[in-house]
Image (cartoon, rainbow, N blue to C red; front, side):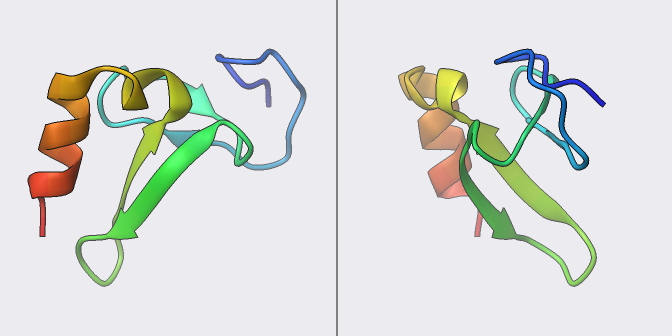
Amino acid sequence: MICERCSNQVHYAEKCEYCKKSVCLSCVKSAKRIKKTSRLSICKGCWGNLRARKQFKAVN
């Protein structure tokens, strides 16, 4: 699997909910569990976008 943000080969990649890229764990800025089986994650690129960051922090 290849990270779409840094182009490194990784074994595990998460999907950023805001830009829809699959990113490695070193490119994930923050993640939280919204249900027992689902995770909401945001990449470092989207963390700089204030609109996406506000949406991420507003989810409980």
